[in-house]
Length: 417
Image (cartoon, rainbow, N blue to C red; front, side, top):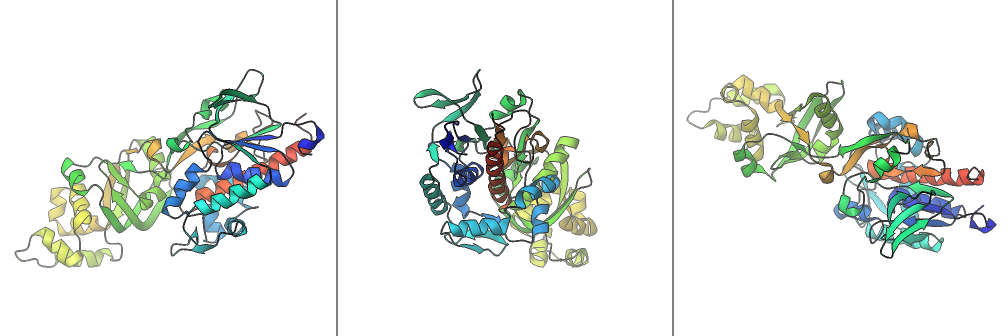
């Protein structure tokens, strides 16, 4: 039952990112007239930005580990991935004529490491299926008689639809279109929402001016990060991060950011521990630290015996008090477990993604808002988060598919009348 029965206005999808476009694909395949509205001058802006570093589309790890990356929302995301997991996503990409490969870290990339060819092929397929895309249409909520309001270059537009999908993104990368302005509009209509907060973000630390000036921008490669939250959640991994003027960021920090952010919210600060030489155990570190150094300074001793230099030596000096620095046992312990206190997450607009948004309890299994029949939600505006590594994109694609199928099922049952 598409547009041809003379009844309908078709489906309005607000947001032309992966979730919205995936829903458009499903609905057009099932014969529905679909209009996609996006605030920006072109769709898929954030998707293209994600592709600048090579478009990490998904991850090849085994499914139980994969779904575990969604933390406290693993159960809800599992329901979305049942139908469209990482392997199905790769097959879908191949169907667009784009080959993929698995990188050394298990991350999956398009063969040519770009998002643009994939997006171009996809948009071509959607347009051929009759999907209409309207850019520079910024959603402004609903008007008094329930029509969707859009700001456009030609003034305000009111649109009626048989069903609406909101796929508005989280609150990060405002300049690419996702600004979170929709939250109060849904909250005032009785939709359960959680405030947006930064995810995959850096953190502030109280560096001395000397340390910040000397080491901002310097990487810490192959360091260990461990953290035990007051809520019992634990993190331990080796990776890399970067010292910033205000604190610290980078993939290792992003991977732990949800735990660190929640701890700061709970306790006012979070203390994690850095292992500056993860390949050595503490006994070996202590033996090298305690090795007679003759007339050499402690700094050159640490450099020659443990290869501790640059930012690694700098952060050790920054975070360890002078007395401990002179005590071999305390120094060796700190090299393996250096306390680093973080005081605040960086602002949302610097974050890669956001947590918070529309609660899963506000949705039925089709991703329809129980408070607003006929209005569905998908993608990053739902209240879930995941580390970088392809997990964010995979769940956005899967969520868009489930919502597209949910809308089609709902319309076919005639519940919109």
